[in-house]
Amino acid sequence: MKAPDFQYHRPTTVDEAIKLLTDAGDDGKVIAGGQSLVPLMNMRLAEPETLIDLTGVEELRSSRKTPTGARYGATTTHMMFEHELVPDVTRGLLPHAAAGIGYPAIRNRGTVGGSLAHSDSAAEWPTVMSALDAAVHARSARGTRTIPVRELLLGFFTTVLEADELITEVEVPSLTPTARWGMHKMCRKPGEFADSMAVARGEGNAHGSWQEVELWLGAATDRPLRLSGTEAAVHGKSSADLAPVRLVEPLAADIGQDLSAIDSTGRHALQLHAVTVHRALRAAERDDTA
Ligand SMILES: Cc1cc2nc3c(=O)[nH]c(=O)nc-3n(C[C@H](O)[C@H](O)[C@H](O)COP(=O)(O)OP(=O)(O)OC[C@H]3O[C@@H](n4cnc5c(N)ncnc54)[C@H](O)[C@@H]3O)c2cc1C
Image 1 (cartoon, rainbow, N blue to C red):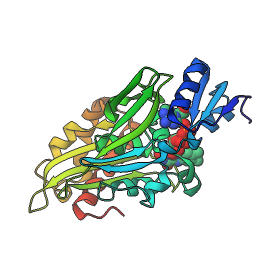
Image 2 (tube, rainbow, N blue to C red):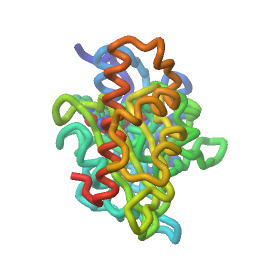
Image 3 (cartoon, helix red, strand yellow):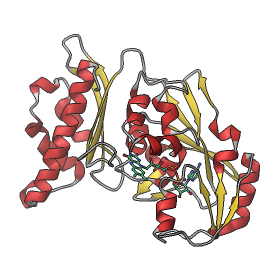
Image 4 (cartoon, rainbow, N blue to C red):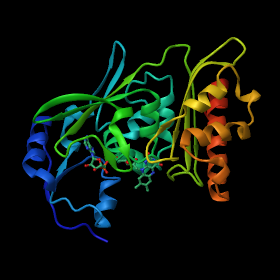
C-alpha cells in the first residue's frame, strides 16, 4: 500500500522545525528515520497532511559528553550508537542495545528520538533508557522541558509529548566504573522485535552477589516495567543461586498477574520473561553480554 499525499518540509534548524510543526497543528508530524512512521502511513494508520523531516537539522544529530554523562541529538541513529560514532558513557550498554535493533538497514535510518517518541514497549530504547534513568529534552514554541524517560512513556504509541513538541536531545547519565549491567533480548529470529527483553544493572559484592540491583522488563506490558519485587528476590544472591523458575512468582506480582488464575499461554510468557531476566543477570555477573 502507498501513503496518502502529504506536504513535505525539510527544515535546517530546530526553530524552523518547531515553527512548521506549530503551524501544521494536529495535521502535522515530524519524521526522523521513518522506520516506524512510514509503515504506519503506508497502512493508512497515520495520515499526516504535513511531514516535517528532521534529517536536515544538523544540531539534532550532534552529541557530546557532559560532566555527568552524555547528551545525544534526537536524530542520532541506532547505527551511530552501535559503531560508537558517539561517546558511550555506559560501558558498552548503548552499543550493545543498538546492535540488537532490527537489521542494518533499520539501524542506519532509525533514530533514538524517534524510537522513544514512538513508544513501543518491545523496542530497545524505551527499556534501556528507562533502566539508565535517561531523560529527553523537548522543545516547542512554548519553551523547553526535561522529561525522564520513565515519565515520558505512557503506553503503546503514547507519550506525554504534546503534538507540537519535539525531542531535541536524549541525556544519559554515566554508569559508575564499578556498575555492572546485562541485557537479554528474546526474539524468534534476529531482526525481530522482542518477545521479552530485560536489563539488569547494579553493584555486586566480592563474592559476585547482587548488593544493589535494578531490573527492567520490556515487551511484557504496554511500557517498560521496573521489577521491584523481583529485585528483592535477587538482592544478596547471584543468578547461580536462583533458577529462573524461582523468579516466576515475583515476576507475576510485578506484572500484576494472578498465578492461580493464569492460563498456559500466560504461564509460558511468564516463564519466558523469567528466563530473560535470569540471562540478563547472568550476563551482568560475567561482564559478558554476548
Ligand atoms: C522491519 C523493522 C524491524 C524493526 N525492528 C526493531 C527492533 O528490533 N527493535 C527496535 O527497537 N526497533 C525496531 N524497529 C523500529 C526502528 O527502530 C525505528 O527506527 C524506531 O522505532 C523509530 O525511529 P525513527 O527515527 O525511524 O522514527 P520515525 O518512524 O521517523 O517516527 C516515529 C514516531 O516518532 C515521532 N518522532 C520522530 N522523531 C521525533 C522527535 N525528535 N521528537 C518528537 N517526535 C518524534 C514521529 O512523528 C513518529 O510519530 C524496526 C522497524 C522495522 C521497519
